[in-house]
Length: 173
Image (cartoon, rainbow, N blue to C red; front, side, top):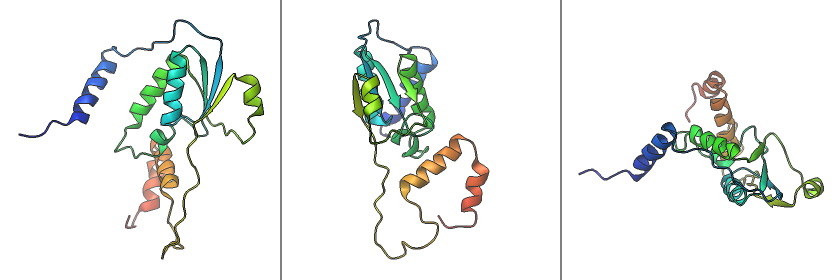
């Protein structure tokens, strides 16, 4: 007997639930008039936004990339986590009242955010890779993993695969 693939079963259940309309936006019925800013839309930022929104607060999530999801969108290859799943979830959060502001880099000075929001949550990921001092590090075409994953995923999402294929043509990857 083959083992049961729990991931596949769970994926089938949630995909069917979305397809059949069982998963629908459920915005809070009462709002607190509190405004919360969340910087970063990775797993921590999205979970925080979801819970604060359910508590009735107005939530705005700021993301430096062109779409929400952070590490989920750009740090995990599409073969491991389909970006449609991330988009489906962030679309649901938006339909429940969460505002996403993308292509926005928040600096070290949070003065303006503190003036316009009752609370600010920092849920940012690290953008500084560790550079290893190893033989061959100085060779050309050696990318940091997150840089490579983000660039590749952006091209995939933009369907710019011609440029991507040209970059790796004839190379051992």
